[in-house]
Length: 391
Image (cartoon, rainbow, N blue to C red; front, side):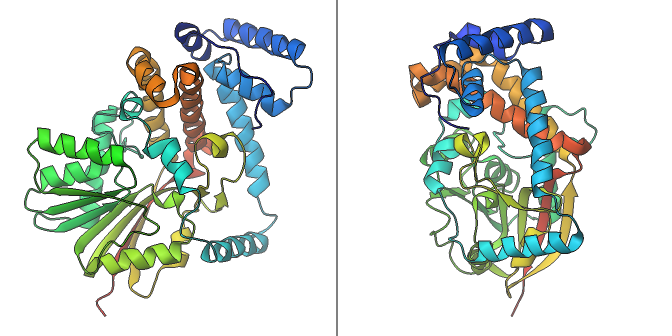
């Protein structure tokens, strides 16, 4: 979306929350329409994108209207990426793969850090579950709490990798430490290493480890695109929703294979489209939250196995699991308005706190609607277990 020609009107903390999260459809719609005409009267040359930016940033659109607009955008996206036949679809995918192979390992990494990984921990803690797992959780019955769903997904990693006490593990893109803290605590005789591109994440993980007496954990920081993860060091490797920020998977997989011992296994967790990969190259999401990002297809990484890897197993996780995860994050974020507000001011400045309170809500709404589109059968999560060959 384009930039507004004038700054959005300032909105109070209480007013912002009331407007954007209003459950009364009639009052919310009336408010949005009134604000629409107010903006148009004062700025008749405002473009559609600028108008939407102002309405979103000002918190004038209730959630049900935002969901309707988001659903419309996903219908348009589906038409944009659709191919007329299988021949055209395959040609398009192979062209995309060749483009990735010619790319740098990652692009716009500074933007990704600013948008997510260097965000003040208090902003994320207001939304995420108790383990601070910033990736899809697992709801087998649909009735789990977010805390239970975090543990269900972490348990599944152990089972899928066949992890045992005494093994060594590295988590590439470890976030706020959900997996590394879990593995280190559950397997006290194991050596657990986290790699993050964020100083604040490292500080948070080590603080929690110290408070809980966890001593078998190390966290390194750096740029995953240029970092050296070592050679033949680890029995297991995991990466959860970091590869969506990668472009050249060939080069990244070479680094991953080199770090594993012969026979070691790499569990890759990525969100994805069922069959069509694409770039986040423009639009509101790319501008504010996913600059330089990639939407992989469920099979994309199968085209980037190096000679040192073979695919051992491949799973699909239905989109409803991520939808439930993000709906829980959104509910927490709105409910924790008072708690998160000082951190929004710390991160974005007092003049922009309300804007970013609204933007984070729209981000969660957009992601939740994406994963439940087509009843959760178009977007989901895939787990791939790669095994390093012993040659």
